[in-house]
Length: 397
Image 1 (cartoon, helix red, strand yellow):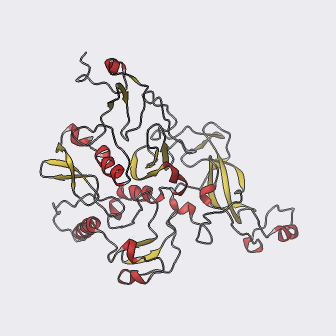
Image 2 (tube, helix red, strand yellow):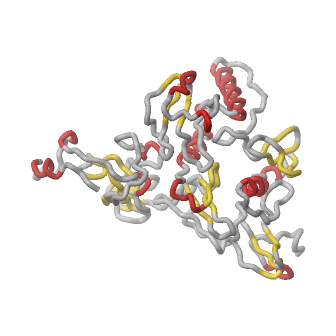
Image 3 (tube, one colour):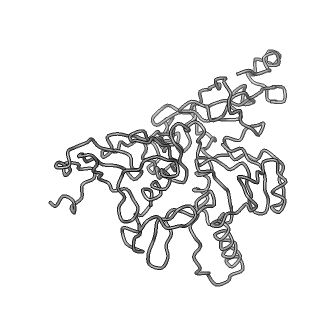
């Protein structure tokens, strides 16, 4: 990485070690913040006494510490000084060591605390012999989790707690996938004050290049969501340089999230003015504005396409255990694989989930919720030895 401050630095009073005035230091950022190595976090104030960007290596559990970092995993931590990210940067990011604990860890008696209890990434899954998740420096799941223990390797977006969230891509496209939009939307769902925000994510969990929220629209960096243009009022969104009629159409809100957002605004106004609660149910939408895979009508819940069309006859009865566990991943994968001209040979259960035990070509094996193998192969006659996925119905005691 090239910084143009070496001569200036030589003029500083070395007795103080650092200049209190960063205006005396000129630095250029020529690396991608997402290229920071494992175990580090990007910071705009990492090197040259906090005047230039770099990657910070923080302390982990039980390591000696002097304090707690102010850095976070919030997507705004990835906002760069210039407002843009160099996608094809070849230079290696500078890494500096810090004596502070990683986000979420406390410095107690000069030692960092254990990982937060809500994060289980570092705890091995005894039922999964084929895959272990990638963990962040605070013991949480990384945003992008890739699985190659199957016929069609893919990457998925995950929450810090280890739950799969919106966004996936084939593994060959993993380098373009950051999932920061999906994580932001997932976090906003937990805060009822932000129900009217309408961030749009692409199918791989990144930000769409054009965003509109609360009446204002702007162009955004697709990796971090950082605004990179002027903002205009929503009716003027088509004047933005990132607007593309072919890919974005004539309305920012899609069919699903236009319905959901309208109801959210009504509920917000009624709550503000003390009106009676509205019992109308809005459709469940994905962060790209399309319909969520599971939609409920009356006392039945169905698996549907992004356009809200039923997939086969997959359904469950409302408020049953089957319905509570219904994700429709298998049903949706049938559509996704067909659209990409890929074979999909695994069995789905009646609710559209993957059958935990699959039998193909004379062998049986266990799969996870995403249809990836988690066990060894056994002859079908020995399927009841697969403790990770056998059931009492399939293998009576």
